[in-house]
Image (cartoon, rainbow, N blue to C red; front, side):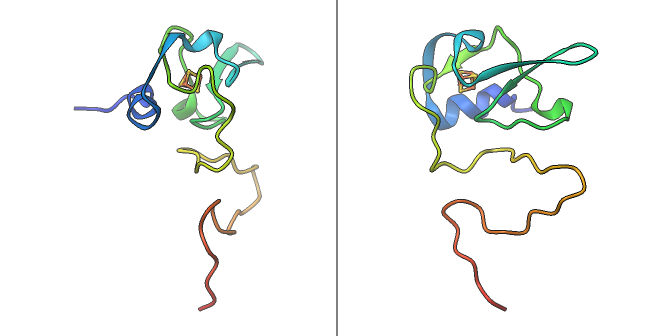
Length: 94
Ligand code: SF4
C-alpha cells in the first residue's frame, strides 16, 4: 500500500479543518502550467512535491511555519550540493 504525501502530513501534524488551498503554507507556482506545493512538505521542481488544493488540511493550517522541524523534503538548488547538517542535527568531524 502506498502512503500518500498528505498522509505523512496528517501523521506528523494531525488533521486540521478546511482544505490545503486555504493554508498559508500552500503555494501556487505558475509556469507553463500551475503547480501546487506545500512549503512544509517541501518545494522542489519535482512532481514528487506536487500538492492538491483539495487535500484535507493538516494541523498546521492555522499554525506558523515550523522552522525547527525538519522538512520531509528539502529543496536544494540545481547544481549545488547541500552537505551541511540538517536543522537540529549536529556536525561531526570524521
Ligand atoms: S501545511 Fe498547509 S498545505 Fe501543507 S499539508 Fe498542512 S494544511 Fe496542507
